[in-house]
Length: 462
Ligand SMILES: [Cu+2]
Image (cartoon, rainbow, N blue to C red):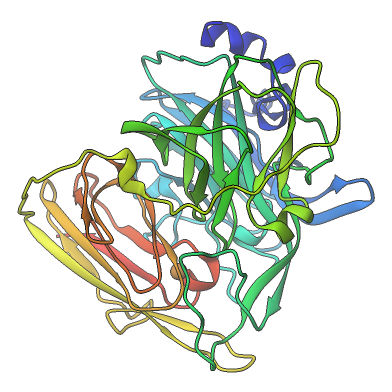
């Protein structure tokens, strides 16, 4: 089936985000009309019968509507804030203006409580992007990324070969956060915390899109289908490892950007805010669990059922072999020596918060807002060296630009463009980027507890 044909039939073939109700409603009411409307309000929804989540979301649904837009075609988005607190919507992974980007630290205007703001921008680059609250949460676990304020933006490329039968958008999120003295065990890139470690966040409920595993419709497939999965880790704090037993994921894009060398893997590691686009050849009929490899979280709902036509029975799960996620699998091997125009060495450290306290985070010894800005000149190419001298893995994110991975844990690579990269505990990752989108640009860890407690720095154009 051609991709265009598929889209016409999207309502029948896919579950979750790609179902018709998830497409953004065109706004008919305002003059002049905005292309899309997002209304922020409190939302309650059932992830399972009798299991209601109370949170904030967009347009009364979680995830927010899938915004399907075209690369290079300008859009307007009206955002109404029906809450009593200031909000801001960040367009993650897009090369747009400071005004539209959605980070008050850069100077983007917020959406006032009970107020409205119109965003204007030209979506780019093509690929799987997303939008989410970029509000400060601090100690408040009912704000920002702890809530249901997230959704996909799919920027359609001008040309898309579309070698797949069916596409599924899956956003992963944890619910009912609480403070805990210990770290979640699932972060394989982390080391044991110090004895004086401060509070961490745990969760009581889990879902793929708006349903816990075993509830809601399964993803229905047919033998020989090639299904394109768009995964988004919309967690406030956690990395997720995902597997579909007896199947492999052919990773075609990372953070929405096509990779130089698509490769098949059994387990995806997706850090907070990362996206993975992967094609699965449906060649193992049955009823399967697509879910996290973390047994406790999966039993608490972190997954979704994949059901082949004419197959019945209890969804099956088998533990995948242990595998180490390696970004460089999807990159070009390289011996190239490029000298950038400038270099930023960024050392990440934790100041443990002690029993019942909050850890603080530093970049080169300082916490935001006291971190030293990175100064760049438009048109120049820079290297950032992320030196993680802490026991946590950090999904670090650069706004308004993408960067190219050049060295991951000592291994050189090229051609992988991302906006977020996980730097494991006590490891080093190097990336290059071109300063090609003037204006204040935020760099931060996407772990909400880290960004709100110092792990941020501004990049400024001279
Ligand atoms: Cu972090």
